[in-house]
Length: 431
Image 1: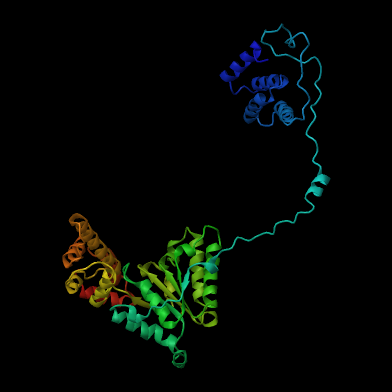
Image 2: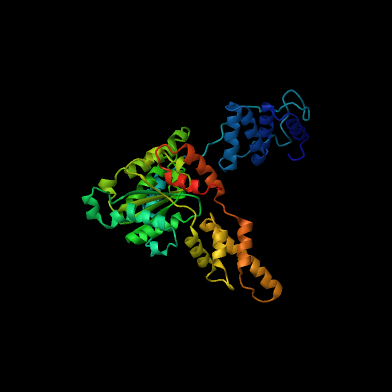
């Protein structure tokens, strides 16, 4: 039937009127009868998409799919002398052909043999159901730091506060018990970014001879409902099993946001509630677990996290003082070619620089010295001038943080939590 003028005309009519359901079904019927079921199927599908549930379309779809599957009867054929004559006219009149008698229903697909299927799969064991693990027990980076507070250059005030408020009771549990002091608890380190809060937390773990587990927001938060809370519970359980253990929550303000700001985020509210619950169980379960938090924005944390038994102790970690800046600079210069350096001059020029800023100063100066070495064809060591130029170009990154902190210290210091910060800003009015 490829050259049948009637079929060509009908196909052209379908292109002109694609939404004509009877016309599409008639064309599909003609194609199926001529053994072209693959071409008929798109027309049947288009007709059923326009008229779902059409009985003629469904019947034709069953015929076509059965034929494609090899279960249909042979396509109907016209008389031996030519195609079936259209009803009420001669061939080529354009009117639809009508079968001379009722067409028998095509056979459907063979029924599914359940007995055979059971025999085929009788020897197979079903795979055990596996629960998707939260993985929280393995989250975080756990280590035994060899650092001590003596390895922290300068920052004597910070180290003294750590000894008196945190390390002293932990090292002398009997003495702490006699005075009713807790040997476990939470300590919140806050201050500008890049000033060594993580380094201090590792040094605390080294002083206590404790395991150190660092937890970030990505280790806790999960897209599945309830999984973030479970991750947090598993992390605390893992820390208890490793006691003594320092559990360090980096950027804790992201996990412990003010719940008043989370009215449209039930998942994060539940995570904050879980954190409060875990930190409430000091006396019963958390003996030997020391929770340290680090944040640049303590004023964004939920106030409940600052209540007794949680992060009730705060320690301001400011940009490194002069001895600390000298130590940081020496550390980053130790493996680089240097000439005679006036390090004191560089230290004076980098006041209010964070530790990360000082590392950037050394990197920038090293790039300049390396470029000069390439140009001259010989190694030119780093000079004081290189470091001073780099410090002037980069500048401290702590300024924006102090601008925000000043508003908090002046107008939000209701309970005296930020007295130390206010005193520092008073001494450094140019910040």
